[in-house]
Length: 149
Length: 174
Image 1 (cartoon, helix red, strand yellow):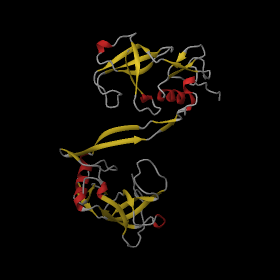
Image 2 (spheres, chains in turn cyan, yellow; image 1 turned 135 degrees about the vertical axis):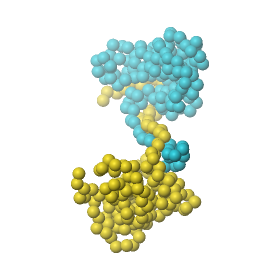
Image 3 (cartoon, helix red, strand yellow; image 1 turned 45 degrees about the vertical axis):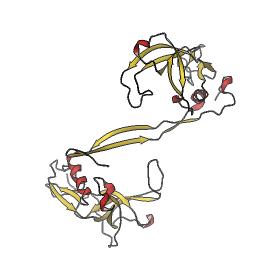
Image 4 (cartoon, one colour; image 1 turned 90 degrees about the vertical axis):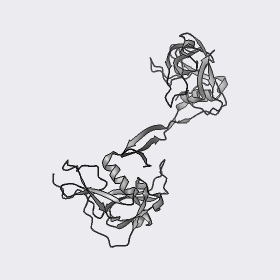
């Protein structure tokens, strides 16, 4: 323990970290590969609906899904919530919106940060476009956030 | 498994197969009064225990006797020499280890204490480590003493004859 004397009782920072590595499987692996290549992927469900991010199985029927399709790049905000005070692990360190963003061609939205500057700019139904990270390595962070289109 | 159909944009690209997803928790650890007393002693190069009304000396003390539920109010300085009561040879590398394997982690019952502390056993080949071995603390340079058990680098054999180990808890009646 490193010392950090706060009055009479000692206290110190304590960090617990577990270095998990997860295998992605073929579907999420393809989705993350797409992000690295600046391509958004969904998957065609049993009823023809397009799910983003792609799932391995249809959420309603459990049927195995295999048909990945390109969606976006633009999208629509289905609903949103403004974050006034970002937490240290949030993707943006200034106020932003968490939004369900439904990429063009998809039938469902997924939770994404929108860098809108101000809550007045945000609206359900607004058009957004992706902002890609400069250095992409095949993780969800390759899609940095969305911005008003 | 059924083949996945990739869209044209991804055909021929090297596919992502795994991602690193570390889980990290950041705390401020507060030692509490009893551990603060112990660590303050360590920062002065002393190993302090506390005696419970029943006579047992705990190192480090948590401030109360777990058997009697009474405060351990009397401070006792214990020896820097003790007996190895149990040990584990670590042969498996793990994240954040910071040690070369194999190495030995041991429970050391310091002379004058009734509770062993856990620390590293060094300057002894792992195959020679044994229960009952007498060991002594090797401290960092005095200028580097701090309120951390890392002020003691490790324990090493001191050459005294082995002692018979009575496992802690043996003979305890509740």
